[in-house]
Length: 117
Image (cartoon, rainbow, N blue to C red):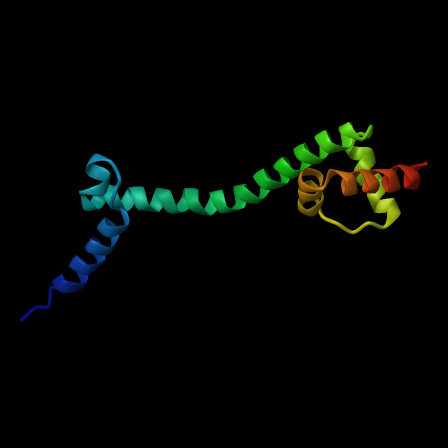
């Protein structure tokens, strides 16, 4: 008697179709299309997780640039100044300070200006 392994095949197909649930049209209904779509979705998810880090860094830099300009500084000089002043805060922390505590950020800007001059 030959073994066809139908149960494993069905389980594999159902697993793929379950992941493709909610996809439009054939992509969510037919196994071959669902398999392609989920593979593609995984590729986008992987690259997206890396992209997110870049996007957030860009956001923090934009915020810092605007906040530094309000305090009469350019972004590049601000970053140079805090490095020379020995302030070890990352861009995320600095941008949060700039939004929620502008007076503290202004003090940091003053220290950065003093370190450059």
